[in-house]
Image (cartoon, rainbow, N blue to C red; front, side, top):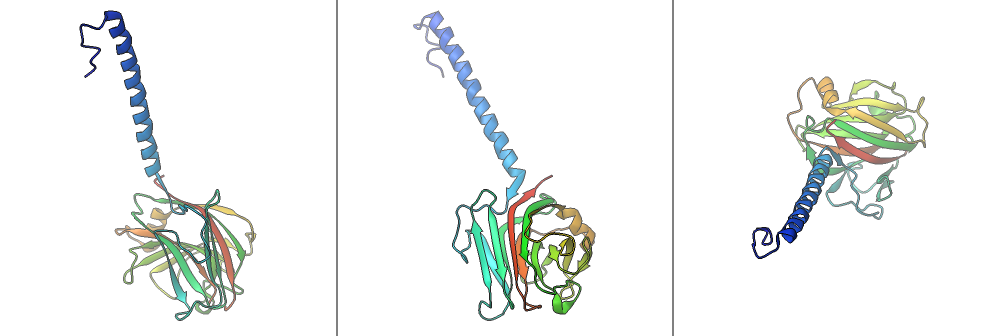
Length: 247
């Protein structure tokens, strides 16, 4: 309670002045609370996947991130390189060698229907020589932005947007190695310049329904992949500004 507002010993003029200050103060506090609430709602409208607190040494993972090596099964291979940089765009740099295939991903689980839009930027500087997603023995890509639905050892489904060498741009394909993996070729060597940044925006919820023919009922995570083991060559890619959005 405001002791001045209800204390008869306080002169009426002072009570009015203090009450006016109280009203103004409460209004200011209300505005601050509203702005904080609006900022919280806005923050929930999008999630930055590449939320990097500081630049790390090569091979060091931020908290909440993990790496998964698909090839070779033993040892680190020829080149197994990743680095996270806290620059203005939060850049993630991946390099692979002649027998390497690996993914880095953040353990942030979400529903595709809740966050249906994925935006990111990427730049490929080295393409695996002779890579072709349509040929099992040549299935290598320098860059793949993957949505992993129902992540785990059993039942995982992957939807990957890839930077391809030979495959036709815009094609939607099923992996030659795994029925539960679907590809969309967003960039291709014959039409998109290496060394240049490109911005992407995809409705991953609609893409999943189209390619898998059903509603996504499970949680999903985001993974960044590089692959050059089949062609025994090398690849290099940079990712940045990876955002999940509600619209």
